[in-house]
Amino acid sequence: MATEKWTPAPLPDLSGRTVVVTGASSGLGAVTARELARAGARIVLAVRNLAKGRSVAEGIKGDTEVRALDLGDLASVRAFADSWSEPLDILINNAGIMGVPQGRTADGFELQFGTNHLGHFALTNLLLPHISDRIVTLSSGLSFMGRIQLDDLNWQNRPYKPMRAYAQSKLANLLFTVELQRRLTERSSSVRALNAHPGVATTPLEQHLRGLTGAFTRFSYLFYAQRKAEYGALPVLYAATQDVAGGSYVGPSAATVSVLASRSAPHATPTPPWRVACGTGPRN
Figure 1 (cartoon, rainbow, N blue to C red):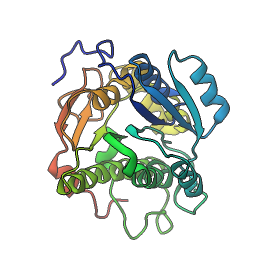
Figure 2 (tube, one colour):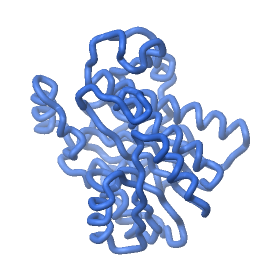
Figure 3 (cartoon, rainbow, N blue to C red):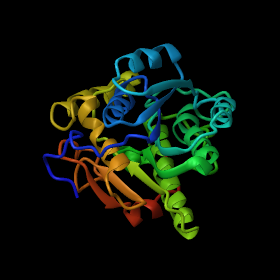
């Protein structure tokens, strides 16, 4: 269990370990990459924009490499995985988009579900034979708003609601981790699958929020937000480096399912069974 004073300062020595961080060209991903490199890890920044990724890598003290990865294009995901031929200690599925206008991935999936979930689902499974330690996938406290609409994953038969679509993708991240851990345990694998919930942090992720949703989000920052990506990245770093049980949900407080519990130190809890059970069914 974390204490209120936990910071990345006492990260264990990660020398000789390799970590892939998706979406490491800004926000939480950039901070995560920087801190893990500071602890001695070799960091592979898996990014869509190579120029931005290289700019971030130049500011990191340590061993870094930038590789192209577009999670909205499964051909790019496969190309990244096919080019990987070495051991991989930790995969951090950090990249994501939130509240964007309705769109489609290169493969025709709803943009947020395809990028946030399906891209990471494919990447994780393709890299799994190489992974020796753990997989950390970013979910969100907003997953409580989500329902997996199996008969309309692409929002073709109902009015598109950006934040509901985001919540669906983040719930899918959570459910994927739970099922992945179940299968890893069933096979007696030592690899651990974990979810991390960064709380409400000011990052480029919310740049598309408009109207009442955007106004509420900005208002909530006054009271609940971690304010900086450095704080929002703490649960990710905790999940990636501490002795946390597989299947845990690491967030900024004991109430890790609460979207508004955002200012306290990282804390690991089991994924609530009721959250998994409520993952499917109608909610428009």
